[in-house]
Length: 327
Image 1 (tube, rainbow, N blue to C red):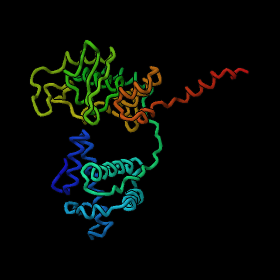
Image 2: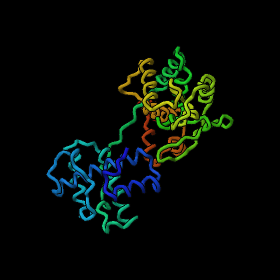
Image 3: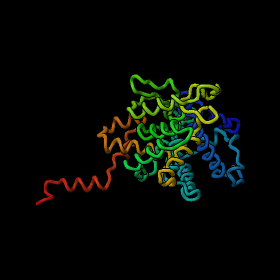
Image 4: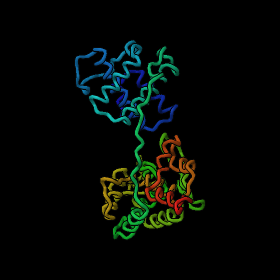
């Protein structure tokens, strides 16, 4: 939760703008608040406005607009250097904070004209190494589905439907947890989900998904389901306590089934199932990259492009198919 009372007014103004105009999710706004709090605490040390060196003991409530106007690009670079050298922050972490700082100062200078000059206007993002996503092979994916389907457990149908949706649709964890029964169109074989930035998108379901969902709905509790702030009575997936299943519970289910399938849980996770779905669709389904972008709910095509990697076997086959290979 964000404690607005600990922030200067211009930070709260930016956070409100992020929620109402930029339509950012609560998690994104929480990250903005965390990044800006750390940035302003560093600036108090940098400008010698405090003798305190422990960030936990530094307040930004009294950070004045006059001091904010003094911040230059060099000061921001100093903060990023501190993150890299002292905090050992990764390029990805620094890139996220840079993004927050850039949006923040753009808001102050262009939207509400609180400062005349934007010190982050020419702020660059560190070059990020493209890491290939970890994903299950087709055989491992089948193994995971088989062990989940054959488990003798009271929640067997629910857990199988969860694994099936992850591996077939590439859902995010929050998207799966947030599914309501009304979001599913059984006639059109489609599902509406709320993704990042509260953006709604349609995911088309295949026969395996529809079958798994219907089999779970047949045994899903109908009596005693809680009518609470989480709208548990409308939720597709319920916990043993008959309320909307939590993120942590889904993570536990996936971890349990991965172990039963003999797969490394230090290597694979819920998010890796999303990677698996995307990779299998691209490698085996001849899916257009733009269609994959739409399915996964990526804002930028560059995010989706990590799934266009090919396996060593595909590279080997490409060489073997060269018409000059038999000469």
